[in-house]
Image (cartoon, rainbow, N blue to C red; front, side):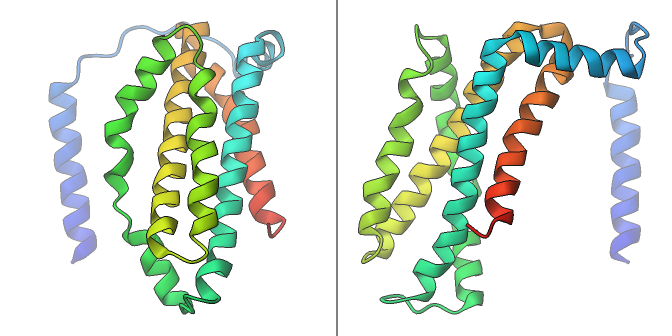
Length: 192
């Protein structure tokens, strides 16, 4: 029954969107190989794109390492949480916690140097997590700071790289996210 309801909702949404969305304009015909070459070209020629990919890679890697090691912290003294408690605790932090910070990240991008604010959240998370060895409140504060910093970095990165070629956003995004996500997968896969 659940699948029937989901199918009906999807069909309803498709009908509504087909009537509300404007018709698609003509797109230039570009071969797939040309698209891939242009993505590589952008990555090779735009230093901002490479730098932002590296920032994202470090952030994604740190985030993966953080959540992997957090299980060890919460399962040991003084917490002694079991696996289920750790999973429930990690997922119970409200997901909307970073929404109010996105406009701040956007305003930071508009300033003279978007890199100035880059280290503030990541630097603030270290003392919070250090004290988190003895205080669950500080663990939660550290999680919130880390998440705000990560979300802010993502918003900043996208805002900056999309300015490079507004007509080629997917070709700008693909190589950047390939580098960024590979670092996170490597950190997670190494057991860090």
